[in-house]
Image (cartoon, rainbow, N blue to C red; front, side, top):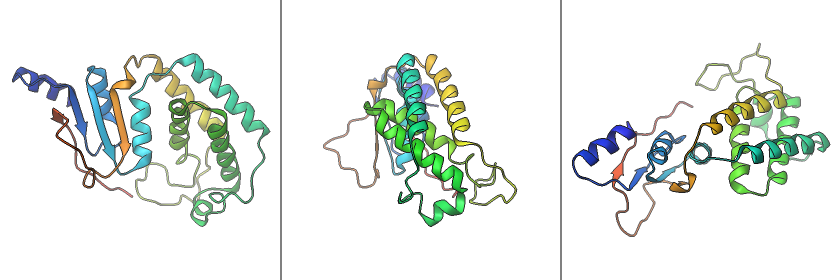
Length: 211
């Protein structure tokens, strides 16, 4: 849709330099815009969505990703579980996750946060982390509503993480785009203040809620 919209606007002699999506979600419009070599600005009220959108609209150096991945796994092996971790002791977390997954996810998130000093690369691995939470939980597979599956066997955290990173590495290898063209932030478009109109084309879809 974004590519067609840019082509249509320019067929009407409207030059499109900046495209915006005020409900950007996981960044499909951002990706298409950057791929078309245009600037993108987007926001979403959900910080996990904007994390994924930023990651999707960047290109990373694979050798650095591989090095960081190795360092995360090494650090993870040395970690001990912090029994006073506020998230690990959250009642909702305990409801959705078994103890082993809680411990491994806690250690993995700590390793990602401490090992990687480059924020954009840290976000790549936090994006991978966010993507394994459902499969590592007791959430009913294929359900969009919050529902526990009493018979589900959650995935092992490291197995799920390594598979997700491998998939993202493969996607990154063909993702030849200029990530500097995208600016994405967690914000509410209804309260966002701007000095003047700064976009040439707005491509968005209204918010929807599943859970």
